[in-house]
Structures are given as structure tokens and as C-alpha cells.
Image 1 (tube, helix red, strand yellow):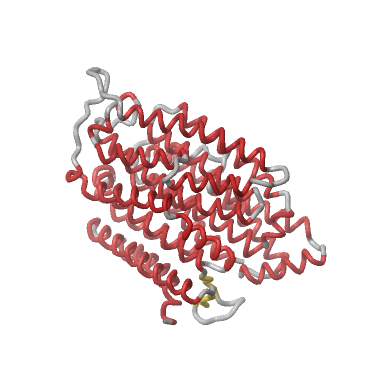
Image 2 (cartoon, rainbow, N blue to C red):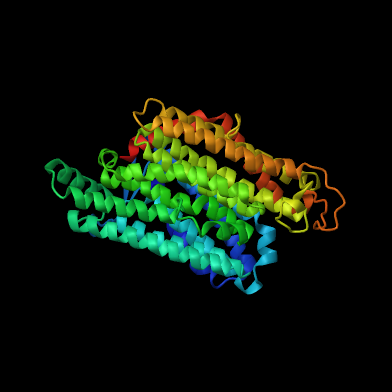
Length: 501
């Protein structure tokens, strides 16, 4: 059984080596290797999850068997293993859903480069989930940034080049703040391992020394990762990046990339600074305010959009706001709600992008609302899938989003001064979600009229898009599982969070 302890490190290294190997392969071979890699990642991390649940304890894996401070460590608990499995599953379905678009929109000479970027991105996500070393986390944050930028700009249509430049500028700003905060902590504690830093921070806090520098370090790292996660108002790169990149890139970026940064921020709160110190700081109040602003402003921007993919992109701004609002509550229940919303949003947002692609395929490739009229009849599976994703985002019972909003509401109840703003923001945001998502659902199920200005539509059968259809069906099932069988997942998150500290 002890061999399973090696699986998290093996899954990270396999992704790195696959990226190197893919550089010398043809596009088809690189695609097959990428698919095998993701399936292997699911298997390895699922075994790790079962192992941790069976033993009931987290464990530390020392890379190269060298102890701190020379060696590097991986820390594996129930929450980390669960998130690694979930990230791999979403990556697999996103790649399946975007297979046709990759063939059509990416030049033949660049397709293997695309798979290299995906391999490196998956490696960075797994490393951010598992690493116990703060500087290693920073290195993989940069790998994540470069890979995501490559996924955006590989479809060179003008708008993606502009979006990738915007993304790089904002990401470098966030990375710079993160690195400054890391340098502050290293200067104060003399350590890079998260557990060692937390021990030193606890000693400094107990002595009452260097309180302000610790607050500054926490603030720099929090704001840096908030910028990289597209928290409002640092979201300006997001609509074009999600709206104009190729489908699998949009699904991966919206559902995974920002979630890796958010998970790292969670580790900083619990395993670097200590959650009690974070709660006492003013930083958490700032995140709460900007989270609520994002919930409202992201939804208002989505309502004003006439492009279905940009509408879904602006919806992500609102959903990121939910997550930071939950962190800002400063309670364990709020954090659990945020983690569950990370899972719920990842499953729903990738579903919406893949379903929207199916609807645009049935509408002459147009993303305009006018041309999408009746698209739900022309591509029945995509219409059903988009409706499921929309209901999940609105928060209808049976679907995953309902559980998220219920958990946020429960977490806010009884809070001294954040309860009322949270409940009001949830109510307003839910109404706004219903406006733009239900407007779209009504549009795709409105019978099309003869209009010479509309793009020509066509009927699409499931057998024409086998991989996309399979991905949509799996996404629908995943959303229903999260909505109907949420309690075991919530308990897993709660137990994992208990191991986390």
C-alpha cells in the first residue's frame, strides 16, 4: 500500500515529461498521449484519495528523501486528493468537448504545441494542489500562467492576441505581488516550507512582533492571487480570453485555471498564515467587499452582452465573487461553501461553454443571440445541456448551484455584521443570474422565423459530434450528482479541511 504514497508526485512528473515528449510527436500522437495522461492522472489520484480516506490521516512525501530545508515536500490529504481527481475529470471532459474545434481552429503545425501547454497546465494544477513548499508553488504559478496564455493565443484571430497580452499583464502584476509577499515571509521566518512558516508565524503572533509586516505579506499574496483569479475589478482580460479562444481552452480556463490559484490562496490561509491570524486581519474584509461587488457587477455585465460566450465569461466574474465572498465571511462554514462552489462552478461552467459551442454550430457558427433563435431544436442535446448548466448557475434545486447558494446562506446566518450584506447580495445575484441565463434558454427554444439577416442554421445529430455529445452527457450527470448527492462531498470537504491545517 505504501507505493500509493508516490502517486501524487508521479502524476505531476508524468505531466511534465509528457510535455517534453509531445514536442517531438505529431499532433495525433501528442493528442493520444495527452488523453492517456489525463486518464492516468485520474487513476493515480483516485487511488490516493481512497488511500487517504482509508487511513484517515494526511501524509508528507519528501521529494528525493532530503529533509527540509534542502528537500521539497508534497503534502497529501483528503481535500487535496479529491481536488486533484476532480481537476483531472474536468480536464478530460473539456478536452473531449473541444476536439472538433481544435481540429478546425488550430493550425496543423501548432496542434502538438497545444497539447504541450495542456500537459504543463495539468502539471501546474496538480502541483498547486499538493505542494508543501511556497516557492515551488510560485514556480508552478508561473508555469500555469505561461501555459494558460499559450492556450489563449494559439487561435490567432486578433482578439485572442489582444486577450493574451491583457492576461499576461494582469497575471504578471499578480505574480509580482505574490512574490513580494513570499519574500516578506521568507525574510521574517527564514523558511519556505508551509508547515515551518506557519510555526514561525504562530510564534511571532504570540510574541506580538512583526505584526504589521505579516499583515502586509498576507495582503500582498491575497491580492496577487485575487488578481490572477479575475476577482472584480481585475477581470478585464477575462471576457475576450474566454469568449474568443478555442472551445477546450475556454472550458479549461474558466473551470480550472482560476481555481488552482484559489486553492493556493486557501493553503496560504490555513497552512502558511493560520486561519485564526487571517480572521483577525483586515485583509479578509477587503476580499469580502470585492467578492460582493463581483457578484453584482459580473452579472450586470453579463445581462448587457449580445454574445453567448462573452455572457458566460462575465458570469464567471460573478461566480468568482461568490467564492471570495465565502472566504471573506471568515468562518469554516463559509470556506466549505466556497470550496463546494469551486467544484460546482467548475462542472457547470465547462458544461455551458461546450453546450454553447453546440448551439453555435447549429446556428452557422454565430454567437449572437439573434442567430441562436431556435438552436435548442436544431441541436437537442446541446439545448438540454445548456438548460441544465443555466439552472445550476441560477441555483435551482436538484442542480449543483442550489447547494452552493444554500451553503453560503447557512454560513452567513448569525454573522454579526456580514449576514445582511451576504443574503442581500445572494438574492440580487440570483435574480440577475436568472435574467441572463433564462433569457438565453428562452431564446434557444423560441421557434426561428424566416429572417434573411439571421445566420443559416442546420440540424446537428449526436452522431456527428460523438466526443462532444459524450462530454455533454457526462457533464449533465456530474451536475446532477453534485446536486442530488451533495452530502458525502460536503463531508469529504469538511474532513479534508480538518486535515488541512
